[in-house]
Image (cartoon, rainbow, N blue to C red):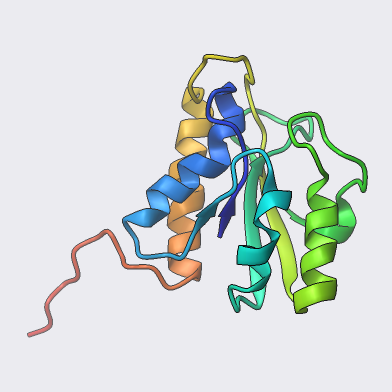
Length: 148
């Protein structure tokens, strides 16, 4: 799982926040900040068949809503908060390492400098991290019932 974003810009920090949540669940993560192109080596050399990116994406919905996007759904041009487009990073991973990539985009409420995550995006962080932990085989945070 690859967290993308800048925690100093409000809800743009959703990707790194999900990485932080997943660290306790033993899910392999990589926090690439706002420059995912700098981490092409670690991503393509990871051996992962699928790269799951989490980032703030303005898709015109209510803050905290999430959407699953494929590489083809993303614009090829750079977006506002990142130096290069995630679509280009995803294409590189597909062409160089035969990795499929998906993006879990979370609608930001505010991306003001110096602000933390809004309550709606904080809730989304918990929900996305829980879903990814389960899907990627992380440790459950709930106590297991003993059989007996």
